[in-house]
Length: 198
Image (cartoon, rainbow, N blue to C red; front, side, top):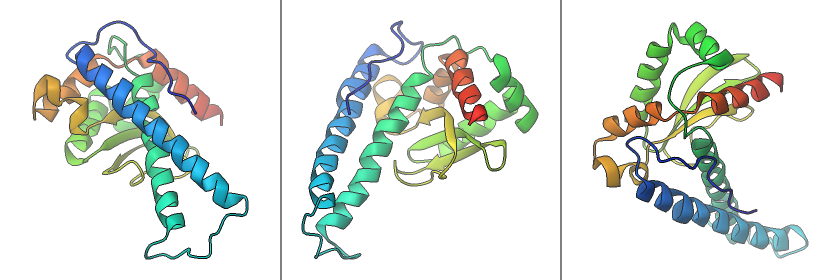
């Protein structure tokens, strides 16, 4: 697995290049490196390695499997977060229509997802749930907590302090407002269309 480049080049409004650089080039890249390291260790166990000490209290296998979901979700959530940045924040397309239908209006949705961002410790995800054929907002306090299997992330908001502390200090609410100003609705629409077809 390799780090993906940022999908945008223009500076963001209210989210500094320094924040994005640290967030993408160090933190996200670190999750990619750790996911690769864990994968290498798991492959040796998957191909005849000694798994006789496997135990639910503590074992090497348990630690690796827990680390695997944390690191991989750290990669995937960050990629989904960066994927929808770099736009002008103006709602448009089929996703905007579906959001308005589901939540009553775009304004209601943004207010609700923003409130979820204040309530969560790590992540807020607008996902498409194909089993319910509906959009849902989920929160997670850690990379490997709070997600629902089988759903497709559409808009991902990182609310860990590293995403905003350099720019807004402890003012998470101000950062969330900046996130919406930079949302790339074309990219989010593409994710929605892809999920809707699945």
